[in-house]
Image (cartoon, rainbow, N blue to C red):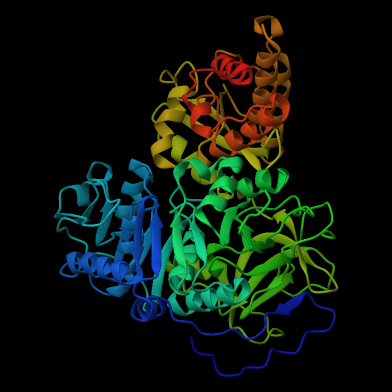
Length: 614
């Protein structure tokens, strides 16, 4: 790591909502891993279940994968990884960086149609994943089996020759990540190596991450924080430990795994972190630092939490983390939502009015971000010009700023408080979702004439729930919404699939002739109250408890014991909350896998009674 030339922090603007992080450190990315492979070749670099790879072994594996790709991938080419957490994912990430190519994380199940749209829009030179899930251009091209543990059936697939050449990212791009877009297609954000290197240097300094530490790899592969997990561990001489699938939505299983795996530094999405913080903190956990982000954190850690907790905020357009609020072990953090804190080194934050002028301290406005952590931009010049704009003349240290669309205020002490969104974009299970993208996906179905998607607070707290209202096409509409939800799933990430879909004959309109979304929500609430089922079907106290909790969590007063949890709109987040609530009320701890195997809610209640008797 090298220190950037000394640059004084610009003087604060008296009374205005502008804050500068302290000077940042430039940091390498791949070179740090290579250095540790030479210095500590036998130290554990990657632990994935029973598999442990030392730094030198992982270095050789990455070289092997790079050798497979080298004849077909050039510097600047996009390489999409459709892989889950595994040694194969880590080796492929290192290999792509070694070739000077651009990593495009897509996750193991990006959805067939969504992946096809991404392939047509971005034209990646290579996709690595299950060949059965690949879009036509890559399904028909050259396939090379990926020689890495955990690859299973994965291949490196190269696009068949066509009229258009593979797209190339701007010079200096380390990775490209997708965010939700209002056109129905995701936006691709290009992040530079210098921005990622500066983030990693700060993160290592903040957490003290180094040899002997164990850092979790848990965040979903399609989301950029997993790159901070991966590169921070491998660039510090620590061991990167892959989280098993079962712990990624079960708070009790997660904390047990932290202990048995010896995790000392970890990152959690907010929807999973909150149930963890709601539980008594387990004794003797080795965890020293816990970074939380992705959504508004609604509670501070209790006095029993022995790890330092960092509430992080940052859009993909500003390289994962822009501000952070650190809460040391102990009491005194209050009972409300923690603030999002102050800017990290190299970042500049300002709160502006609608014209981009900085507001006085204490006034709410739009958060704009400048400085070292800014992304290069989108792979669409028009989108870049719209969201990355010139910095106000009064602000030194940055030529441009990113308009986040987030509503915040800066306190007199310079700390930022998050207030919500200025536009319609919402957070669902920690993922930014543009309702217009969901509407566009629904309207691709010939059975749909028009769709409107609205968000409401999740019935049991913890974020937002999406509701879709669909006007069927004349003579082609389904009898209910289930077939439409199944058809839209391949187009969307899991978090963007509506939890509720209602068929409507027509949409209410407001005075301007636009769909009145508030009226739709009001009608939905009224219908839910009328549709509540009687409790005559409930025969045991446990069935009554299960039905009540599931109705509250899923927001379906019409739910019955014959319904399946997942089919009724259950997600990984609501499953985690249900498991915690069942343990608290019934005194029985179930695993996520046991819950999800049950065909209906009646079977869940029966399993609880059997476990209680046993």
